Amino acid sequence: MALETTEALVLKLEGFEGPLDLLLELARTQKVDLAKISILQLVEQFLGVIEGARRVRLELAADWLVMAAWLTWLKSRLLVPQLGEPEDAEVAAEILQARLMDLQAMRQAAKWLGGRPQLGWDVFERGIPEELTELDRSRLKLEMSGLLSAYLAARRRAGAKQQYRPKPMVYFSVQEALQRVGRLLGSLPDWASLEQFLPDGLGDGIPRRAAISSTLIAGLEMAKDGQLDLRQDEKFGPILMRKKEGGGFDG
Image 1: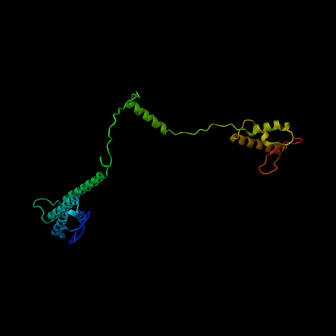
Image 2: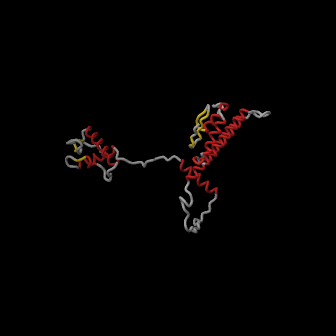
Image 3: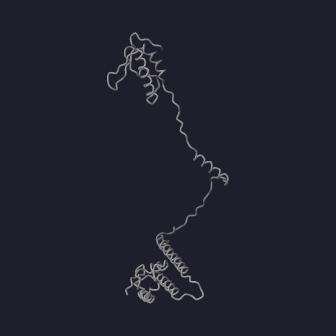
């Protein structure tokens, strides 16, 4: 019978064909009948591996030997149980599984170590080591209690909810606009732009827009009362106001 010598020992036995570690796992979970497995065939195929050991890494051959020995021992316990002792095949299988897991862990650790940079091969020491002395010039005297207090205070500040409170703004009201338009309208000749009635120092922000709105509302109220005339010659053009002839102001 042929035997494949790869990373896994592939067996071709009567009742089973596959890797040796799979056979051990099936035997542990009682999914294969060890009574039907020929130990003679197992030994013959393993001897074939030993004879061709030049084609197999020695660590692999050693692993296979351990697994084959445990498999043989399990079957011997099955065929010839110890007299006067309780059957402990399940305990033995658990021990085997634990050892196989340890073996796998050692393989992974060896692979990880082998992949690490090697001193003198991948990395090198400095030619002349520096003689550095670390000096602490902070002159800080810290105690554990003070450090903990500072940490807790920082945590409290970070956890406190920040409330946004915008600065209150004072806008030009409609009542103020009524008084200003009534006071200035009589002193301006003919038609005057609405913006001429705005207070000084508004700038170009929200206060200016609020003052324009208040002045427009004041003009509409005064036009409704018959105190002034409003005119806009084009869309989005300037709004013009003038005193209505015969109109009076309450001021």
